[in-house]
Structure formats: structure tokens, C-alpha cells
Length: 236
Length: 304
Image 1 (cartoon, each protein chain N blue to C red):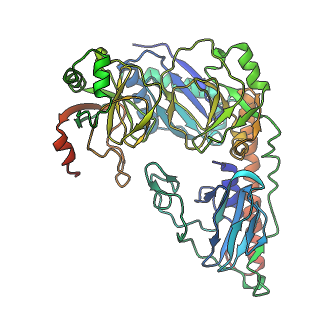
Image 2: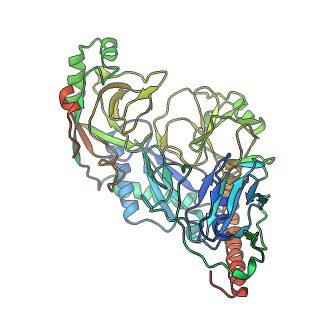
Image 3: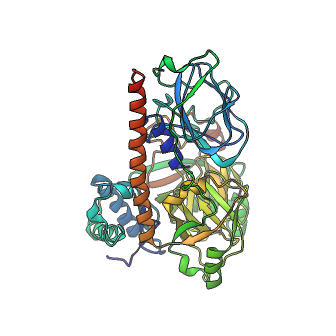
């Protein structure tokens, strides 16, 4: 299915292709497939492609583009046509296949510092909230905000809550929710999402390549562990 | 941050532009060279001295073993770059020698440098004939780069419009192009927070996250703006009002806290042309630097 799209320049050295604000797995799949195709056969001057929920931003070195790519003093026309063709070539022919990950989470309120408050505000028993959170696998739509931070969806409607107005310091490994998304903070950071648990797994390994085990398009399934198991978790 | 200063600093010592450099803010380090080196300092002028004798920025210097480099006061600019012939011996991580402080990886042990750190660098051959007296620890190579036109902060920062520009009300669009904005003291390598008149969007709908770039001008919920800088997050959800023209990023990087800046809207075609012209000028500059250095070394009968 072909969606409406918008293409706009981000200054003279980048262009964004955007499928709009409606969150949708097939849009995301198309975007990821576009990226996959570009990095396999990049045009001269291509530097990087950053994907988000429904958009892909291409960054290029202007001076390395071929002169034929500059039409009326700008590469925008060429890059727009390139992106349009790319979209049409992938939208019926999805190239990208993600992998599955299982992530242990301890939902003890000592670690899930916002769990009880969130449950109360949603008129849910804390155990119900926990059950709703881990009983469904989530798609990683994008990585952003922090290295390795996965933006995942879609959360059960009953768990929907706006981000906090004032972010607080959040511990590394914190599993959190906001809106229809769930995520995990790989590093200690200020955060405005509601923290409902923590994973003992270390998510960012500088000494490994790649340092983060997951990518956009992958699936994550949470499974609950006890506080005891959290504390005695052995890192491989 | 300041890619122009970084490149020129490298070219002045005969390095290609991608060689690792040391970025410093004020107060900057006291650095002792434990062996001979060919260096240059580009970017901000923090009044560099070698053994308490002043040296110039944007110029190459040969320094002798035991020379002590120090920076006496912030004269102009926000960040300065030390380049060294052959580069510092830093193991790349993810294809870069830059430091990622949050991840504690990259650069020198994943952290800013500290007192007593010893950073290795390549050996060079120093023409012995240049140092006439035992007191002279440096030799100034006789060429420098005139960088002033690149960094004139009295000129407005050029920008092209962003996808949410049309969502600004007319008064806000006008304010952005006429008012003065101050670089707040909260600014850092991730973003420059600006203080100025409040700007308003006609439509308050939140946007979903999308890729952002170095130079993206975003509108914050409080009506103030932030310009994303070198260490920006890869994605963001704030409205994108515009994008700073690439040619003006070095200038912006040297705008220290409390500097007042103004903005000037340009077309995409103008931004492209300026970028290509700058690139062409840079290529000439690079060639000039390399030729000068090669001739100098040939004249003194030794190899770079």
C-alpha cells in the first residue's frame, strides 16, 4: 500500500523522507527497508541514513555528489527523486527482517519506582499492570535519545500515560513506559517516562561490535524475574 | 565542533583533515612535549604561550622536546584545537578517535584528559639548524591563515527554513529574523540554548521523533530555541524551524556563552552555493599548506 509522503531538505546536506504521524508497522518496515537498500548500494557522497518511526533522513557530503546531481543549484531534486523511487521499490518488497530478543525485568517497586503510582492512576492492580506489560512482544520502531535506547510499541491501551512534566534521574537498565511506547534506558539519565522495572542485563558494550545487540525492526519480549534473581544475575 | 578549525589545524601540520586533534575549552591544559613536534593551534584564541613566550593561533610551529604549552586567557572564541604532525596515537572506536563521555568509550580511555596523562604521538624529524640558541624552544613557520572572514560574529547566522517554519505565527517568523538571541550558559556540545523573545506555533500538536542534524534549530515548549550541535541526539521531536547553513557552523561553534547572535534567512540554493564555494576555497587552502610545508622541509634538507 502506498502512503502519502513528504520530502523536505534539512539544510543543504541532508534530506528527510517522511510518511507522516500515523504510527504504523508497515510504514516503519518500509523505512527500514529503504535504509537497508541505501546502505547496500549508496550513491557517491552518501554518509548516513537515520531512521525514526516513519521517516528516514539521508546525510551526504555535498562536495562529493556528482555534478549531474545538482539541478538548478541544488541536490534536493535529485535526492527527492532518488528517495521516491527507493520508497516505491521497497513498499511491495520488504527487505528487512528483524530478530527477537528476550529481556528479563524485575518489576519490584524498589526498582520500578513509578510502578505503584502508575497502577493507581490507571485503576489497575500492580500485578495486572505487570501482566499487561510483559504479556505482549514489542517491535523496536527506532533507536534514539541515548545510545541503544529502544522506542518500542505498541503498549496496551490500558497502560497509556503521558510523560511526566518534570524528568527525574533514572537508573541504567530502567524499563519505562510513556504514551503507547515502552523503552529501556541503557544509561543512567534524566528521564520523563514512568519507570516500572529494571533489567539486570547490560545493554551497551563498547568492547563488542556492534556495541548494542538490537536494532529497529527487532522484537523484544519481556519476562519477569524476582528481586533475588535480579541481584544475583551473572553477566555473561 | 568547529570543523573548519580542525581541518585547517591538520593541514597546517601536513595532516589530512581527518587526523585526530585535541579540543580544549578555557581554562585549557598545560602541555609538555616530551619530544620534538610540529603543531598548530586553530579555533579560539586563548593566548597560547610556549615557555611563557606568546605564539600565534592559525600558524604552524616546530616545538622542541620539553617545550611547555600553556593558555593564558580567553581572548576570543569558545573552543580551540591542537593538531600535531602524524596525529596523537589514539585507537579508533567505531571508526572515530572522538570521546563519548556517556558511554565512557572512544578517544583517550573514554574520558576527558586529566593531569598526568601522557599521550603518545608520532616521531618527527626537526631541522636542527633552526634552533640557534639553547633557549629557543619553538620555531614559527612563516605562513598563517587569515580566518577572520569565516568567524565574523557581527554578521547574522544564515539558515534555511525547516518543515515546521510555516507553523510559526507571522510575528514569530519576523522576530526570529530581526531579534537578538543570547547563547545561554547552559549551552554545550549537544546544543546551544538561546535566550530571546518567545516564539509561538499556531498549532500546538506534538510531533513524533525524526532524524535531526548538526545545526537544526528547534522550538522548545517554552517558546525559546535550541540549536543542535556536534553531540546532538540522533533523533528529536521538537518542531524544526530551520537549519543553520553549513558555512556558518564554525562561526557558531566559536560563539561563547553570552554572545548575542542574529539570524538571516537564505534559500536552499544560496546555502548550497556557499557550501560549494567554501569547499573550493578549502581545497586551495589545503594545497597551499601542503606545498608550503613540503618546500620548507626540502629547503632545510630533511623529510616531513
